[in-house]
Image 1 (cartoon, one colour):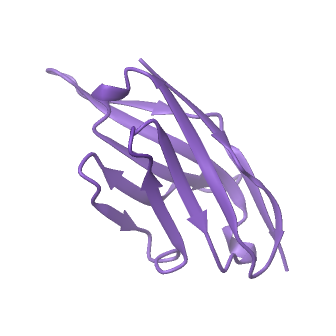
Image 2 (cartoon, rainbow, N blue to C red):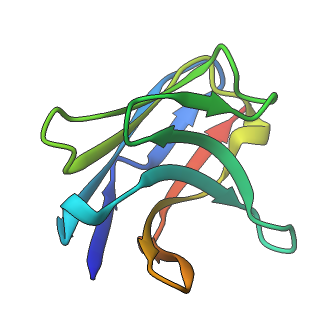
Image 3 (cartoon, rainbow, N blue to C red):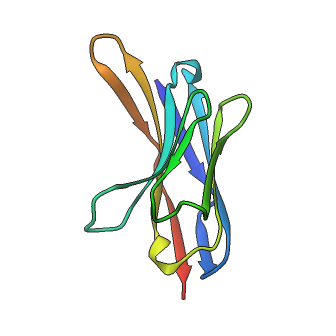
Length: 120
């Protein structure tokens, strides 16, 4: 089992920056990859950024060049540095981690979410 707790959300003006953190605990060594998603009420959950266990990253087109995903050396904290924020970035941001389960694919874990609001 893996537990995830996000922090760092808040209200920021357009063009500003925020950094989200996600503290992982439990079976951290089993984590294969981690990601940030975001969700706006009424819309589907959107993958924002992803990082693999060896540090490879990828981003949604809408945030590439503005957001940076990273992990601590101990791999127990995930970060999302968000720069040049836009009102359309307003959403609940959710931390995700996944671990392989033999014969069953991937087990996904989710944090409780952090609200990010960008004012125009």
